[in-house]
Length: 65
Image (cartoon, rainbow, N blue to C red):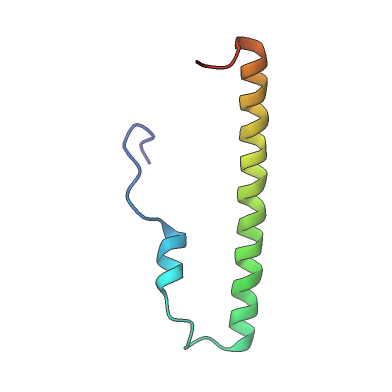
């Protein structure tokens, strides 16, 4: 993927929110919940890492105006 290109509108989470859950069994729903909770944890960890990186840069170079 080319990082210089703009991100496409919408994302996988938006697509998942539109999907009907009716065909899924209880076991499949539990599996889906586990996968989504793991993804939330991954995103939070990345956010925290990015925030720490930003705070380090701000302390080194000063906050942007």
